[in-house]
Structure formats: C-alpha cells, structure tokens
Length: 461
Length: 116
Image 1 (cartoon, chains in turn red, orange):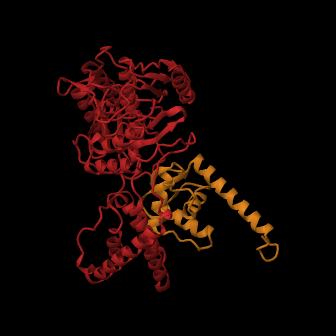
Image 2: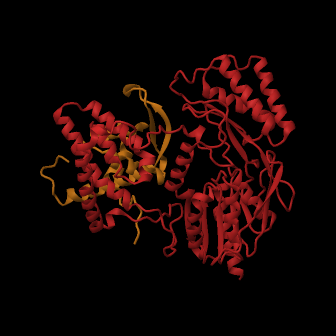
Image 3: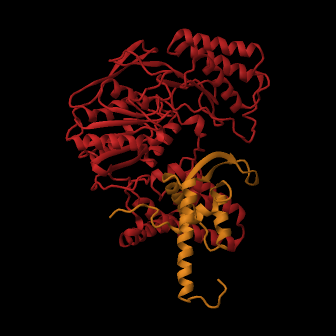
C-alpha cells in the first residue's frame, strides 16, 4: 500500500519530470523499501521522501524552459549559454510555492490514505521501462550514422538467438530492402549479399542479438556504403510489422527535446556583433518550432551569423528549410526529395520572409566537421549551392538518403533509406562524397576561422 | 539577472559528481554512495536525486552510459551514469574552492585544536 501512496505523490511532479524519471524514482523507492525494513527504518524512509517532495517539487515547477528573449550579451567561449531562472534566487517565491505544495501534498496524502485500497488497477503514471537508446531513438527521417558497438549486455533469454530467429530476421530484412530501398538494383544486391552470407553459414555461430544486428549492418554497408542503413536490436518488445516510431519512442523523443532545448546548445552574440548558433539536430518542427523562433529572435540584430553544425547529425528536412527561411527575403527553392514509396518528388521551399526577421541579407557561415551528417549536410549543401553561406571546416560524412524504420519482429528493426535529395541547382546530392567546404580547415579551428572571416568583412564595410 | 542552474554548485550536485568519480553508477547506487561519503548526513530522495541528475546531464557534466541490470539488485534494468571530463573539472574546481575556504577558516583559527 505504501508504494501506491508514493505513486500518488509522484503525481505532484510536473509531467516532463514524471515522463523522464517517474519510473526511476519509483524504482529507487522500491530499492529503499526493500533494503530498509522495520518500523524505524520505514519511518526514516518516509521522512526522507516527504522532505524530498517538499524541496524538489517546487524546484521542478520553477524550472522553466530557457528563454532567449532577454538582452543579448557576450559569453566566454566554450561555456553553455542557456539562461534559466534559478530557484535559489527567488527565495520568497520558493517558500510560498513550497508552502502551497506542502498543503496540497498533505491533502493528497490524507485522501490517498483513505482511498488507497480502492486503487487496485493500473498505476497512476506510465511505468514504461526506458527503451534502449541505440536501438530506439529513431523517430526522425534523417538519422545519425551510429552503429551500436556490441555491448557487454547481460545475456538474457531474449538475446539468445536460434537459427529460426536468425532466418526470420534475415528474411524480413531482405523483404524490406527489396520493397523500399531507394535504388531498387542496389536494394536487390544487398538482399542477395545477406542471403549469400546466410547460405555460407556466416551467421550460424552468432547467438547474441546485438552482435547479430551489428554484423548485418556491416554486411549491408559493405555493398551500398549507405550510412543511413541500419539493423538494430531492442531488448524491449515492440509490435512487429510496425513502421516508424512507436508511441513510447515518440513520447521519449518529445521529452528528450524538451530537456535538451531542442538540441540548441549555444546561442550567443560573439564580439563584433556576430551571432553564433550551435545545434546538434534538425528536430521535428511540430515540437521545436517555438524554440527556433526564440533562438532566431535572440540573434536577429547580429551583423553576421554562424551556424555551428560540427556535432549535428541531421533530422527533419522540414526543419532544414524552416531554419533556412531566416536567410532569405522571398520563398526560395532549397531542395527536392524523391521518395521511392510514393514514386514522387517533393519540393522544399523556405517560408521566407519571416515576419520581423532582419537576418535575410546578413552574411552567413556554416561550420562543418567530418561527423556532420544527413540533414545537417543538406543545410550546408543547400546554402552552398545557392551561394548564400560560406561553408567552413571539414568535408562532411556523406549521407543523403532519408530513411524509414521498419520493425521486422518484436525486437529487430531495419532502417531503410527510401528517398534521395535532388538539389535544384546541382541536380545531385552529397551521398558518398560529403559536402566540400568553401574554406577547408580542421573542425577544431572552424569557429576561429569563420569569426576572422566575418570580422574582416566587417572591417571592410 | 538569470543565473546558471549550477552556479553556485548545489551540494547535492557536487556529491553526485564525487560519487561518480570512481565508477559508473545507477541512481540507487549514487544515493547509497552519497550517504556513505557523507556519513549518512545526506540521503538524496528520488526528486532531488533525479532533478540534479537531469541538470548535470543537461550541462554535460555527466552522461548516460548504458542501461543494464545490477546483479546485486535483481533483474530490473537501470540507467547508469558516468562523470564526463568537464564534470571532473567542475568537481575539481569546487573542491579547490572548498580547500581555499578551509585555508581561510584555518588562518582565522575558528577550529578548536589543530586536527583539521
């Protein structure tokens, strides 16, 4: 019964905290309840829990998403620039909120004592066990090139494969490749390669599921060199034959984006009024559009703007054109994407002009590294082709094909590239070649170089 | 003026950084390690623990390494955390700050005897 009370008390936390840490908090409660038996220990446990609630619940509500609307000020380079409201700077408000929440929780505590016995069905918060990161965080169209290394997983029954399971996974992968891979011939060649490996018995000795997924990915990439192709294993069960992210993954993605400020890591005004923006994904505009609006507003009065994509692994093509919108005064055709499944080509245009935006005629620089991938490469490539930005840094990874993820069985999934960009200027894309920078320097020196370039231009004006 | 959440570094966050200095730990192990290194004076509740972890993750002072079970605690999967190099730097600078403070306290002779 006391666990049920704690579940009810957890409801006092805001939903973003519950989604992220609700199950971990409950797990910690269970651990302590198991280890600290007896009346005195139990009393101490509950004193700790109640004190913890009174202190931490107000802090969670006081924590607001970083606001970029404040006065721009330069930061020491290398330091994160998120502005947040700090709980400790508002003691009076915190005490008041703490008081109100304490009263609220005493009421809930009282009610729960009286009604806990009636709550026998589902627990109040969703007890999702957290999906395994490497295999499940793939709700976007363009994805990072990571192949998870074979980890020292605690071997469970699930991860022990037999011949029938291996065959099912290979057959599933072959079917998806034949049906969807953007270049049908290459899709067939990859399917044949898997079948040939299977016939030679190359997979017979692999009983660990993660290893099997990594080996399949390697064999597929040996044929196509397509860094978006990926076979993954997830210890959790997902519905088979499901395409795209599951509701749990979408919820996790949403809370990840909220927690990470949509991956906008640095938003600063550098010396000589140069705007600097570092972000590590092109996230779903449905979730992150307000963040983009706030970020760009903060840099609106800059004389030049630097987009740092050195750690950016891509994302949603719509976000690519949304951010590019700030660099043009009229709707501009930045990219086309041919989709094999639909057998049609979709045009991508910027949504320019953006109301109130003053950056459309300002100089722009894009920083790249050899790890800049996928949608981030599109951003660099589009702007380079339109001669709207100077690309500074290293040649990018070279992954251009947007992909969809298919669940083969309850645990294995395959990400199949189904589309290819056709740049309206070059009529080509950057698959396999990467984007060549205009100014080639080591990634570590790219920011300094871009700043120097921007300052030189500034002095000439 | 808005402030950064970890400036000054709250003692719970500092204790978490210290607890991870030796090895990667999951939430409950961090709580136990902190209790041990403070002689039981600080028992982090779930709310304080995970809100501090969230902030430290956000600022990249710690990182999630993987998810696995702890054989001593059954078969539930647990998220493990690791100190990053910037987290180690932060812990070191906080420790230096405290050492400076201690030096000042010593020169002001606020300790009884010379045992510190």
